[in-house]
Image (cartoon, rainbow, N blue to C red; front, side, top):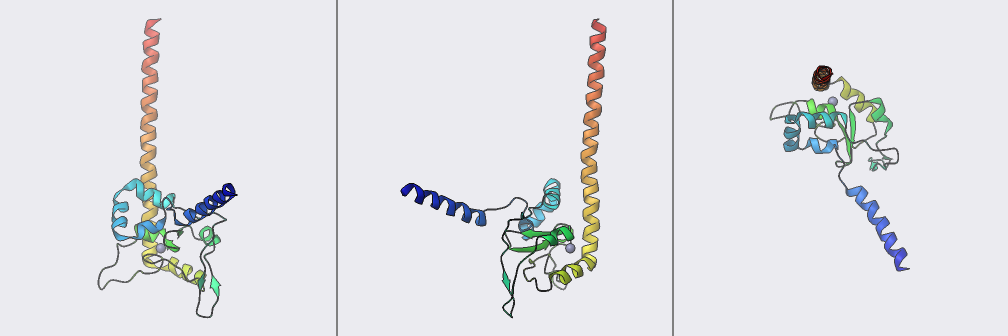
Length: 186
Ligand SMILES: [Zn+2]
């Protein structure tokens, strides 16, 4: 009986730790100002947050948000397929535009346009979600951030390729040199 009880406790513990544990490259981390500045400075971190963003799996249970009429709605995973810039944060329990978080204007100052939902605060109300997401796509700052992110990926992946080519060239050179050495011994 004790054995069963302890197993159950462990099972419960596993579930609650699943809820509380931190997810790698959860976009919610990148929203916090200090973290945001740090990520933007570290190119590989920026790349990982952009291209390896934590994404909930099919079995993930999204929290429900009740509207004033008592209707409960939750985030729908297919929205991520529809909008490749959309990321759901386990940490913030809501959705963000990862492109605007990572490449949008820095946290807005006094007198500047408040960027708000999807950039600084998560989208958690889903009544008009499809309309809100479509509207976000049309924002000038989103379009600019998208262009910047595409340019960044091109540069980052291009650099990786340059390094690979260089390594490849180096390898060929070494092989050739070694072949010559062998030849001269024959
Ligand atoms: Zn955006």
